[in-house]
Length: 487
Image 1 (cartoon, rainbow, N blue to C red):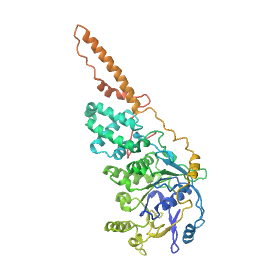
Image 2: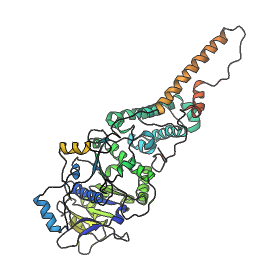
Image 3: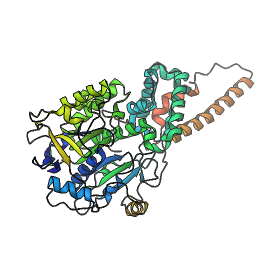
Image 4: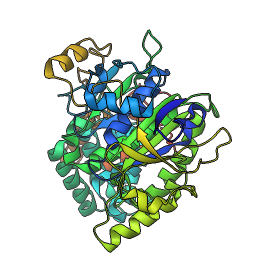
């Protein structure tokens, strides 16, 4: 059980660990205490041996790695809630950063991300999305790995060069569409996307570590720079969720989650997402709980999340909302209606009156039923509120077990090298054919025209038989397009 909070007039409010994989929501306006609530939940899960992943949007969650120091406000809150056995403590933390500056580099490959998420990341239209799917389909059929942007660019250029043959087998491909996609790749690269793709790719098992004391590691993704491109941020977290869904086996409803995943600034996941992606997100959220993974969305207002997803979030923590406009008032009413009513509490009125660190809470009981909403003072965290000092951060980061695993990028043979080698072989064949044709013309007796296939036709028809010897099995994809099976 996780103690969330309470107040002098009420009993303590606990989150049932058996129901923690039924997902949750932490909502509230800026400055109302959502980050501290996230910190309390994360360290509580860690203490019971559950690994946690969370995006550190503002860079102030790193203090979770250091024990709290005494403070009058913390002492006052402990006395009010009457927290038993409060003890300041540090937590095991792993630091991650897509750009590799404030944590271990986090990478994935183009092939692992798949065409659905990549199309959303590049903001492609329907025609461009169709061509990208063709590129992936051919690469998957041939077992060609697309590891980074140069691999995908090489594959797209190959599509443009062989568009006539491809169009007969897969559907219309034009050089203009391919060029438009490549321009989108350039925009992505200029915004930092080249750091995102490559190897060594993140092993999802490294997010599920437990230390020698049995405490779950809290993985913090430094996201201040990443948030400058919200699409990269949201697509990356969605890919991680997809990897967890595809890689983990079914476990039903365990006594506690295997991993808890906090998705901060959750509205970015749903903003401008196409209908098909929203449907897949809903499926993943619905099904991933049977893998023992709890997903907790953190956002300003519950209305930021589609109803089909919001209905699956059983544990709710609602901090204060502000009502300045008629639209705000409608949002507050909608937020109040998401709770199971409490006859002793005017939920809609209370939402606007909550102080910092205070929230409305409803959690699931042993039978999965939401409890009546209660007005609650959130517990103070046992760890430091605010970021670590640079020296403390460096000390913890230098002692990481993953220090030498991800810090060095590698570039093994992939689609770029395979296609380049094939192009060189075909250039040699073309030169040989031109020499043979010249020899024929020089002979006095006319010869029948050769029935040989053109170089591009030969390339297209023999690609499946001549890709590198180490590759060749068709790549199979899951619900959100990530690769299934061993990688």
